[in-house]
Length: 422
Ligand code: ASP
Ligand code: MG
Image (cartoon, rainbow, N blue to C red; front, side, top):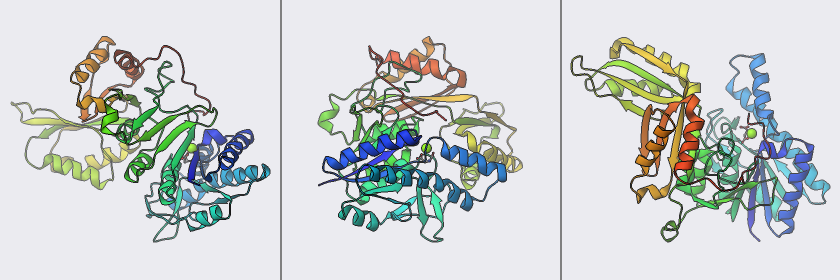
């Protein structure tokens, strides 16, 4: 009898009806003969509401207390879910992240899982119970304080537990039927993928596809845990994420999908003296400020002035921190000025088939050109091409690219069942 880990997101347990519906699915899995471990997120928009509340009492809440507050959201849903399962005649026991053995480092709000010691979960399963675990939280190894893994972190909890329990599969239940070739809210004719490789999913997650947390995919790849992303609102088969063998890649689609991201901003450092060590100084400063950069472009310096511009993208939420960190080294670097632009969007084309098919970039860029979309910045990996465009043109860019690569389905199959999209 294999272990199955199921994760239900906030939109799946948004209200009492949702909790009951999910409880029924859990019981179905148990009846089918599995040992069932469930990871649950906070109900609906609870996490956002708790954040709003915190902001009302303190503009800069203590990170320790904020984590304590936010983890309450998952406690509510896990206890309700355990009750609802009990009501269907099966024993369920709920556990906080700490009780489930999720040990993290001490970084509040973005803790990393260091170890999972699921002794109590195994004991519950051994006694025939269903274990229900609060997602997105753990306990710091050193301080013993309660931590959270960052927004959307319940996916990572689920995969980490699946790895520790050597589960057969980690099922991620959400409000869409799987991974689509583009966000169905923008491209209604987007197609669901039956399967996709870890590396493609990693690129999609990193490029703004909100379906899975990036760290969850990294974790799954490291421990070879197959993920099945599917809807909790339908019985349809979803998308399987796993290693795709070489032989299978022949029939693999060339392009996995088109992702977009509206959460980044662009900073340009204007008039940087073109000499050794300046870029290092700029990027060391940003690293010290704990800023994660995405794309970086340095212009060829103008011969007359020997000055160059350096532009990079970063999360909008880090914009102010980055600007003030850079302002502090203005004299030392000797640059002219800083420009900040948060009216940008990133559109990415992802597919393992790019490695073996030439001409993908040309086709992508000409699709953007025909849609009248101007490209601001470009970056690539082996299996991805990303461009920065005007935020207002993101939808046009996604639609044009999706059509140019024949990804449109002839029917509308994507249903978005729940969620406020908040
Ligand atoms: N409830 C948390 C959030 O909204 C964690 C999660 O949903 O995975 O970010
Ligand atoms: Mg949530």
